[in-house]
Image (cartoon, rainbow, N blue to C red; front, side, top):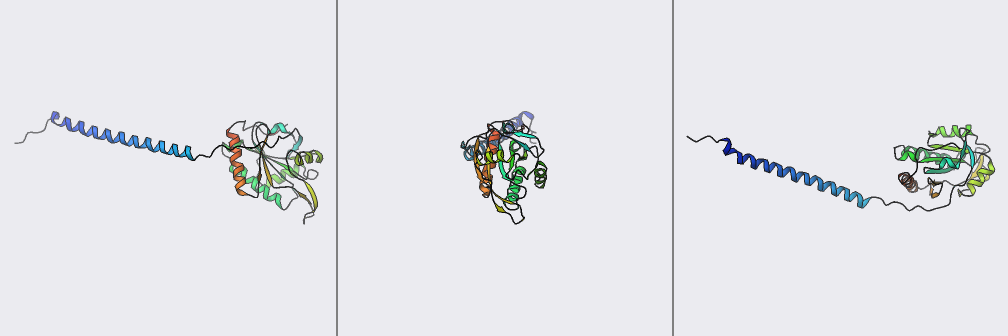
Length: 233
């Protein structure tokens, strides 16, 4: 009759099976580590390089009023990147398109990292565009006053600011079909950094340029500044 195997006889087999299992666990762990290293290496190799943004001058001192009728100076822009553009509420051509594209930028940057990007829209028809009219205009595009402000004020000060350091136009050329003034201005967006330096000009008619604007603004948020400060004098 065959003898039954004792525990001493089975011990080498158990040791061998344990060794085999340990070997496969180790190989699996090494495989996971290798994959992780490969993913990180690929991400590093393909990451977008930091942009080299130009210095296009600085936003000078100014004192205007926002859509709430409160004083608003250049100091409200300090500490975070700001996108600046230009509209007027009686415009029925380019301005609604600019506002819709601005709303899209606001909506795309609602995440924690994007929230540091602020938006400033300046009226090129300040004699007509009162704070109340700007508030109503902003409400059409769900403007969040914590991130998107509208400015008006004395025409001479607005004209000096817009046609000077902000590099735009606000010339009246007849009337619109609606009867309002036809005030010529560009659809360009400006990007201002936390130190009030203008770092880029972007054509809003070019969707690629608007995407580039968002990337550059996010870069400025990432590389410094206080993303929560906005508004007031």
